[in-house]
Length: 375
Image 1 (tube, rainbow, N blue to C red):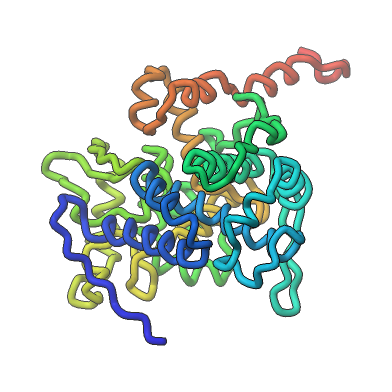
Image 2 (image 1 turned 180 degrees about the horizontal axis):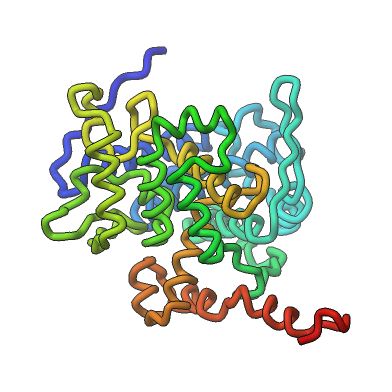
């Protein structure tokens, strides 16, 4: 089956790539809905009108996963396909069935694909999300009188780590400088990596500088366009979670690396396909860089900064943590940092304010037991 080209008739003030991305999420939601039982159709409408597209997609994915479990791992339903599960089957489900699914099956399960068996493990945070998706579904079905009882009161509680109990992973300032030096000079790259670096070094440097300056989310950076930047006014526009639009100021470093890349390395529009004309960061195939490619790029340069293997490099989210902590350590207002990073809750920003990575190091450094190291 040939997949038809999708063209966006955009009357909003959002750029076409943002609208297209949102449309892709919605299309994925509709695809999953077609696989799910028909009696859930009113629930689909509820999600469409009450949650964001990405949240809707997550709920639907979790529900499809549960329905697949019902067929393959239980005798609750005799259906051969998910869409054939009946409301009568759902009326047989009790809280203990959900607790077994979440606490036993979801914590560790395997999927066979060809000659490979993939083993998946979920931590408590992931299990809580799956349980939340099912809770929303079962409460709706009970409220809509499709099932006879509300079983959600019997769901086992899932203990989540306390806020701030996890160690925040980020780069120290000296590691950030080492990373910028690596992306600027190619030092620390393998011979094969240097071949690619010679073609993309200005692009890579612009990406790294944007991440550590603004703490952008991965998809915020990936969706940037040339038209996002207004160099006369010294600002650029991004589209954040919940469909919010934000204007961020340019500093001299960011303005320089972006202009260097656009003027000296990025192909001109004459050599680009129409859909890539406005995309800021391009692959060597002259298409918009994927999130996966940017993630691998960041892992590569952060691993050099930390002196570790590539697989142990950090994700873009760790550079978000790096930017947040560095800004706070320089004495900036926690509320200003919250606004810059688009934290919905100030407590999220406070985690970075409370985190002093070097405190433990300084404490132990001055606590020596051997005479030759005492000060």
